[in-house]
Every structure is written in structure tokens, then in C-alpha cells.
Image (cartoon, rainbow, N blue to C red; front, side, top):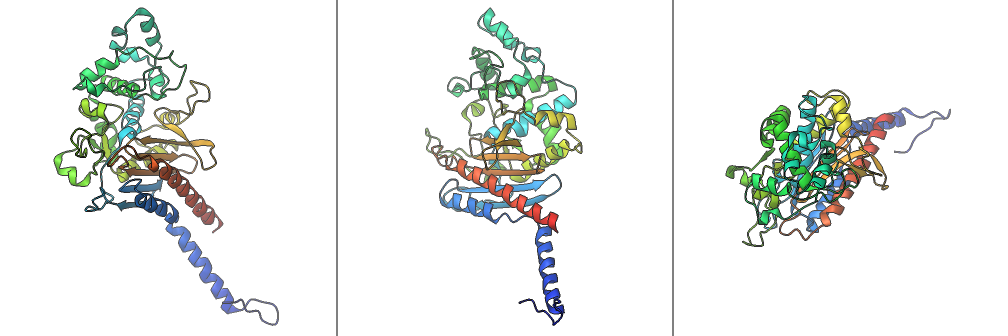
Length: 395
């Protein structure tokens, strides 16, 4: 409809009505929330390109869920579709969803401090050192060092080849000498996170899985977040990698070999969860930064989600890593990825979170195309949210 003017140069009633309708439609669109069609298209293309057979995604703010959807299938047989209740192996997202969250609660409860020496809670860290020089170095390692991956520990070892229980795994880790001086270098270490799981257990007086459940998951209603899922949950769990020994997919047991050898109870891997459950945690962390959490005090949340510059140019918070934006610059956003194809991202400035869960290692780990999809989806979600926010402010 074209604007109509009367002889005095005034807009006619018809045009006024038309403009009013347009404004109402724009306001309704803004009220409905951001349009995440671009992110959805990226996920659909990722599935088509076999970056992963399926996925779940959840996006929201500290106050509400903006988008929760499922795409694709559990595997490439295409018999069972993914739903929002699909439970994925989180892999290293366990480090933040489980272990780091437990540490936030233990600090809040006064059970430990991040400045505590590791040996305060784990005397074997000193006792099993091979010599006095090593013992001297180990006395300097703190909980903060381990949470920022600056403790000098070995990154990874194939311990599953020689151990068959959690105590055996722990004892073997404690035998390895430090690779660097504490605080001298960033080195992402699964072994450090395994030690953190044990320290949390001793400080909290219960095994790590019990602390996760009692201190974090149950209070937040995360009923689908667990370790070692029962057989009844298998229909909801996508398979991960095909085991090269048996030729059968790993299904319902943790994909990480070291965690599997230790019974699925370690601090670095082992949790299974849904995108909607992780969204509950992300939302609570955003609320905590505003002092509105019933679990995490503001000062604790602020400390855990900020950069700890132990080493030069550090981009590590406690447990979490800082994330680059679409322009390649670091902001206050933090995130953590998991080897199986999982991702959680929290942006304190936007008060926005994203959870993306996939089984990209199915049927083989030799496929890293999910990393690009993850990055593109994160950027698309942020862009759509910013566009919607700008429109809402104009209205």
C-alpha cells in the first residue's frame, strides 16, 4: 500500500492505519524473541555434511529459554530421531558442569579455598613424589593452578592400558613428575582435573558424583545429568565411537578411555546430560553474576568466571576458558568444549548462554568438522540475539 496524501500534505487515515499495523507486527516479532533461523540452518547443514548425525541446542538468558530444539538422528542408521530429552556424553564439559561447579559450592560453603596447596587435601601428592626436588615443586601447586591448567602437570597419558580402577588411576597420576614449574606455563591437563575431582571428594567428605548431585544437580532440577547411566536410559543416549577392538559403538558408557577405566567417576569426564539440563546450570551462573543465585554467591561466581592471569596472556578462568568473538577478540564470554562434540558458552555481557550437544565422534573420532559448525553457530546465535535486542530497544 502506497502512502496517500491529501491536498494539505497530510498522511491519510488509511496510511496511518497501515503504519500502525506494521508497528504492531514489528513489536510482536520483537516480543516473540530472536530469530535463530540462521543458526538452525547451520546445524541442518552440519548434519547433512556428516559433521554429526544429530544434536540438541538450547539458548537463553538469565530469565528465560529463548530456543530449545533437536535436530537429526541418534546415528547414521536414521531410525531414531533426536529429541530435547536426548542424553549426550559430555566428555570434557564435565570439567565445568560437574567439577568446577562443585568447587564453586565448596568455596561458598567454606570447605576449601582456591589458594589451598594441593597437598593440604591430597598428601599423597607429596608422598609419591620421586625425589626431594620434585616434592619441593609440588608443595607450590595450588587448587588455583589446577583449575587454570598451570600446575605443571602432564596433559594426558593412556593410563587405561595399565589400570582398571579409580584408585589405580589416581596412584599412577601421582607418580608422574611435573613437566614445568608451577605457574610457569599453561598446559591443558586431564590429569590435573582428575586430581581436582579427588580433592573435591576429600574436602566435601563424599565421592565426586555424590557432591555433584547433592550440591549442584538436585538443587537445580538437573534430573537428567548423571554418570554411568542405567540400561533403561540407553534408548535416549546416542552412541559414540565404534570401538576398534570390538567394532561395536560405545553406547551408554563414557567415551573417554581413562574415565572408563576408572569407572566413570573422574573429574575430567564421565557426565551425561541434556541440553535443557545444562541450560539450567548456565542460567543459574548468569543469575549468580547479578547476585540472584541461591547456590553460588556473587563473589564466588565473579571470581570463577574471570581471567586468572597466572601466566602471561592467560585466557583461562577457573575451570573455564575465555572465548573469542566473531572478530577474533576475547571478551568476557567463557566456554568449554568436549571431545565428543559438546559445547557450553556463557556471555555475561549479553546475559546469554548457548548449549550445543552432539556425538561428532560417531562412528569415528577422525572427523573434526563439528568444530567449525560450533564456532559458526555460536556467532550466529550472538548476532541474532544482538539484532533482536537492538530492535526491542527501538520499540
